[in-house]
Structures are given as structure tokens and as C-alpha cells.
Image (tube, rainbow, N blue to C red; front, side):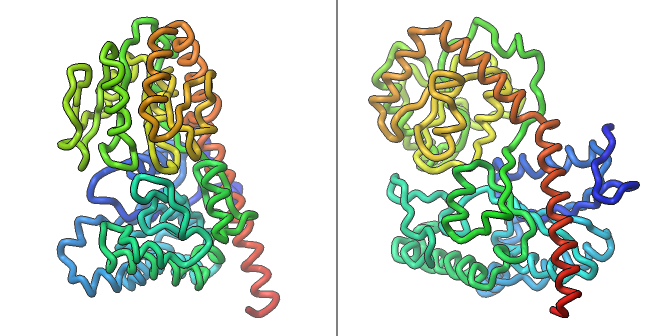
Length: 411
């Protein structure tokens, strides 16, 4: 176990992680679990406070609305845990819907000053749908303003009422400064995401960039093996991820083979073709094995991604990525270096890139080597730990300075 980095010499940090889990496990859950394990492996004390969306089934609509806006129980729980655990830092991931932004106020009111860090995994603070996507196209109508258009368009779960709840919750807490003023550091997953948040009024001076990470999958030579064939999709089969674009492209290149791993609402609607295998949801070990035998991972997203875990996993396994030229993907994937880019939503352009990749296996293998190098440079646990601890330490220093200033001014 490596020695812990700490602001106060002599003891590791005490970190309270706050997260509202989704009903269907996704990338955020993987990130939270990985960061908790990483911090504990480095000697820090971690307390995990979680709510689970399976609890929603036992609540009335009025109770759920109340908790989404302000959860008194989560506020009380976090207040108590800060006191009992003696947290130096509270790191919040997802608050929707049961944790609620009330926890920011609990941290801010903690005696002695406790640093508050938030990771923003999506664009929910200014897009109730969280994806900045409407009708299959990028939509920024609500960026920089109250999200009333999302209510009109029923963006959240195709419901005007639920969209209004989302718009009101985040609009109200934006006006109150619940996160914008109270957080000591706010983590974005990419420069692209940070710029979107700043455009929406987030404090640029307190924004930090830290990508996701995955543990090293092993021998880089094995990860760059020469016997790779076929194209792989890993992820949710839903509109914003663009699997239907890939299926349409696959119809134009019947000589190529595709493996789609994942489940979701589009699954039953996607046409079955002789050159496509639908593997369904597969365990992590099977994903790793598939990545070590495919020639490229295809990310045909139609929305602005955060930082897809599948991209990091692909780079870890020496697998180049063929991605939409859109949002963070356009910079995370270096065209012609560690992957290829195509015009988002354009099945014809995607088919052209697939043909090129199949016709140039040596170039694709070299891109795989570069993908592995990108992983080693940016996405390892060691690199992530250094970045995360630097963010915590900056947050603690900022909180102490703010607390000291408030005492001097009597505010």
C-alpha cells in the first residue's frame, strides 16, 4: 500500500463519498467504486454515503418531488456523518433524485470547515435530459438559461411534469448558488465539458479536469496483438449512443463483422443482419476479452459524452477507437493517431472509415499501440490518484482560507 498524500502531515485524509445510485448500473457507479478502492488502497479513510433509486418505488409522487428539491433526510444523514466520521473532504457524485442538492448546504454548514468537491458526470445542471440531445440532434437551447424549453419539449422521460421538476430543481439551486458558490472544487471529465459548465455560469477558477481511469489490464504486447479482427460496440443500446447508426453502416459493408455488446431500449428495434452479433450485456471480463480480439471499438455517439469508460478501457487494451467527431470525443481520439473520427450520425461516412480500417490492418495496429500509450500517459490509477489528491488538497486549502476570511469579517 502506497503512503497517503495529506494536507496535515501525520495522517491520511478522511473522505466522505456521496452518491445516488441509478437503478441500472452504469459508468458513474464504476467510477465511484473505483475511486473508493483507489483511495483506500493508498491509505485514506473513506466513508460511503449512498442512496439507491430502487427506493423510489416506495415513495409517493409528492414525497419524491419534495426529496428531489430538498431531502431533509439526506441533509441530516450527511451532517451526522461529517461529525461522526470527522471528514476532511466530502466528494459528491450524483444527487438525483434522493440525495438532492441539500447535501451541499450540509457540508457548507459543517463546523470547522469541510471541503466540498463535486464530480460532474453529465450535463444535468443545464439540461434536464443530461445529454444535450433532442430528437437525435445536439440541443443547447437551455445552456445559460432556465430550462423551460425542456418542459415544453418533455425532454426528461417524455414528461412535462418530470421535466418541470428537473428544470425547477437545478434552476432553483443554481439561483441559490448551492453548488456554484459552496463547492471548493468542481471536477469536469474533459476540457470540452469544463467549457460548457463555465458557459453556464460555473466558476472557472474552481473547475478542475480529471478523467476517469481503469486498472491496467496487463501485458501491453498482448494488448497490441496482431490477430485482431472485426469491430466492437460496447455500451447501452439507446438513441444517444448511436447504435442504430452503426447498424446502418454495417449494412453497407456486409463483408465486415460486428459485435454489439450491451442492452437497452433500442435493442429489440435494431435489425438483425448476418454480419452482426448481438452479445447482450456481458461481464467485465468478457468485455476485456472482446477488446483484446477486436480490431477497433466503435463509438457512434450522437450526444456530447462525458468521458466514456469504454474509451478508457479500449485504450487500456491497446484497442483504437472509431468515434463520432463530436464533443469530447473529437479531442480524446486523435484522428489517425490512436483512432479515427467520422461525421456524427453519418452512416455513409462511418462505412467509409470502416472500409479503410479493414483495408489497412498495419495502420490500425499502430493506432492500437498509440492507444495503449495514451492510456499509460493519462488514464492509469496512479495518474488519477495524483490528480485526485491534488484536487482534494486544493479544495481543503480553499475551504480553510474561506473559513478564515469569514471569521475575520464576521460573516
